[in-house]
Length: 183
Image 1 (cartoon, rainbow, N blue to C red):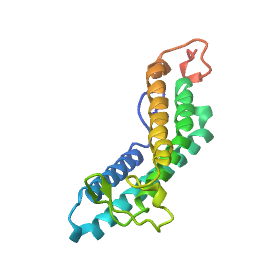
Image 2 (cartoon, rainbow, N blue to C red):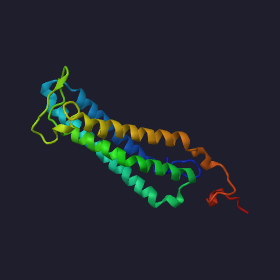
Image 3 (cartoon, one colour):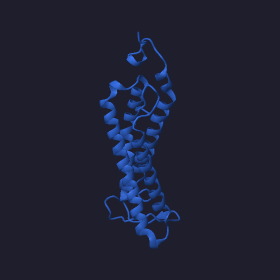
Image 4 (cartoon, rainbow, N blue to C red):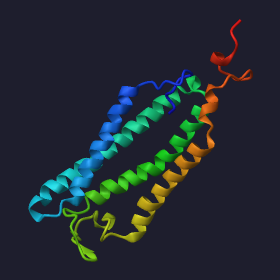
């Protein structure tokens, strides 16, 4: 986490817990909206699914805002936290495309019921090509699958290669005054 200080304690813990709850709520609403299969509750399910996806979009915007704030404070970040911020920032455009596809796919049809190998779709809807089931597979491949893989690869590489625990070790040549011996 880029907001950790030299003492190892995370700052702004309450704000991140609220963002975690927002993401959890978005996930729950989306799952409920997708798994609701009865036609009598389809209107409510569509509303829940759309609200969930819009909450994910709000969460993405909050992540972008946090990244921007961290960039303005980058001179106060520890060495490897700066590199983590670069990785997070590199993944944000891919995550934006993925979030946009989710929004377009969710609003591409009024139903999400699949029967066998076909699904219902409103073909006169201009967003129909973004439908996850009946839309164009090339759009699905690029905007959802490849973007998701790019984000996962960036995060996995950063998480594996960045020695974040090294930020806490005393280093004589470090540019951070907190690590210099005090005389």
